[in-house]
Length: 116
Picture (spheres, rainbow, N blue to C red):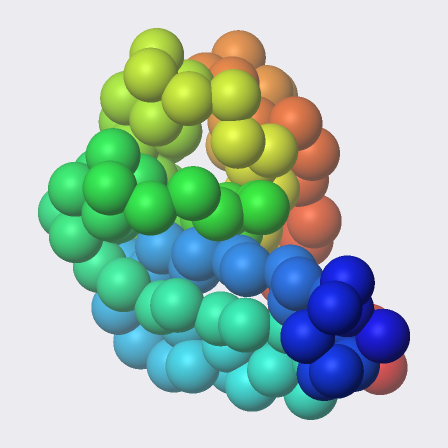
């Protein structure tokens, strides 16, 4: 119970911002996040920069599969102004992009396509 309100206390849901460069990846990631009971906000790279400055998210998932250079640039820009944890999604077998993602400030990387 909440303190004195008579209403049950609800835990805050984890809010994740998904920055996608196009294609279906952003929607697929969003669907997976929502399926796990979290809140997903899927935006373009340009919109992500503006939104990070105005809203506090718990995690950023950065789609670096199709437009890797743009994604890495966004990662550097976000890291310069925020400590939000960043997970970069990179194409399978692209060790060069994985290394660049870590150098750009990503906290972790996962390869796409994902296993089931």
